[in-house]
Length: 278
Image 1 (cartoon, rainbow, N blue to C red):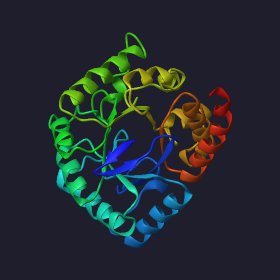
Image 2: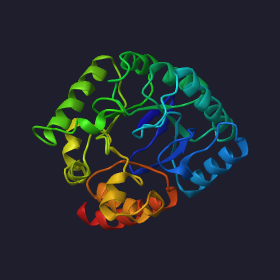
Image 3: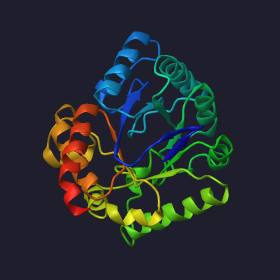
């Protein structure tokens, strides 16, 4: 169970997290949406919820290499109105804020967000851990090295994937000491990882259960798929579903995706197979 400020979200079955990017430069153009486009925002949110999303992940900072680096104030202006709008119209949906900045996380939670999704795992803002502990909201601890601009050069792991497991475990210990109870682990697919390492993370995903936390997997339409298959991002849905299915078989609790319906279908069908292991 995740405690969303008094509301409980069950993880007994895997969940789908739908992506809504309020950025002009996220890597998948179909995920972008203007903060001013209220009708389109509500339409996208409604469709994702109807298709089976339990969480909507709102992001105002693109982490793709070469993307813009907006100031915190601009990031807040991109996400807070969207969070407030969705919270008003869909009061029961869980909302996460995709940010590595503590002040953005604070503003987003005050506007109605329930979860903080930090791609840097606290490494890009030394105030983040204290902030989420004070807010007392679930925190997605993702593994990354460097910054979105430098992470591609930081893929040397002496003992893969044990090094990643150890680095996440050390941060998890810090969060526990601060009193944070609900932590979700994200191994960080595509963040300071080569395509081959991303496939390795999927193969070894069950190792991350040692941390005693739910596991989130975010491989949706990423370059690991497009480069391996030699296809554009727009054609990466089938590859995404294949990798999501592998993730589910290896213990994923949450799938972070652009395409909710297909992820939900993968969960239903995977459960039909996994019941024979019980």
